[in-house]
Length: 354
Ligand code: SAH
Image 1 (cartoon, rainbow, N blue to C red):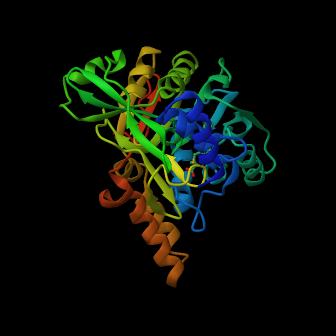
Image 2: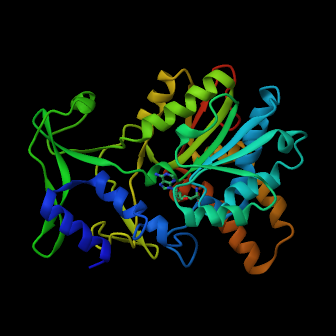
Image 3: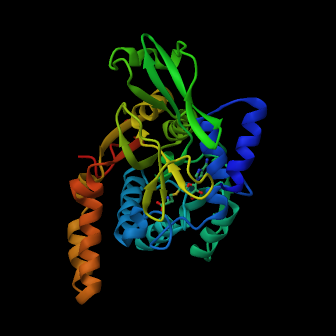
């Protein structure tokens, strides 16, 4: 049993079961034992690989998309360039590299990173030398009065979720409990859940639905800034629209495992439901667009960029570059499962969506 499992069991024996959201928050962010606080999650040696770690093309195209939108909106100066959950800082480094040739972009940008883990903040500082960085704990702390150009890749899937199972017109919540020999899952008593009232129309007895309680407020904070000052936010993640079913998952050493098996040592995530993010953005005055990652990257020109880079490569390097292109775009790899939600001012539909 991990040290965190022992601590959670002691606590639950005293105060009762915890929601999946409470469990996820402890496992990911506990300062002593939490996954992001203690582990090196990314890359071949880590537990999972993300798009910016697969190829430089991902960060480059995001950069050009944001920069084109910035030009389309009159090249405002200064503006906030922000990333939520920058991981190793790879995406931002590629983005900055690709936008160096956009006149005025670098002079006008003020870089703001939202990152919970002090260890990853150090990583990000090292990946982005020679540029001033303002770090924040939450997106709600981003500057309220400047145009906001923002990227969040695989950030929302790490936010804690709650899970409910339908019983009649009521819901039983999936809870983590202290079992006889370790952590176990249980169900709360059935109760009406007001935020799930609209799901009674499209679910059946026994269906599982998930909610991410902290996500809408983040989307709203971003949309409020973009509605009043301009900008563009790109939220990229695996998931869907009004998602249905159990998507709570753990990854360790690139292998799926039981999310209760090794708290603090495995990455815990859930699919992102984009519908409440879009609703919160609209309620705050933003407009939204939604597409799949594969078509999005194609429209931004990933294929010509891939060909251009391939010209200078040979042998195994060329093969792995071509495989990375396929992995990011093909429907059966990341192209379909990963979605892109844009939050933008009504007058400026972003590049890559049409
Ligand atoms: N965007 C990166 C990393 C994704 S992993 C990439 O694509 O490679 C998730 C990132 O979000 C990590 O940097 C993690 O430390 C950060 N993170 C997770 N939960 C967070 C929270 N609640 N607040 C702020 N940052 C968080």
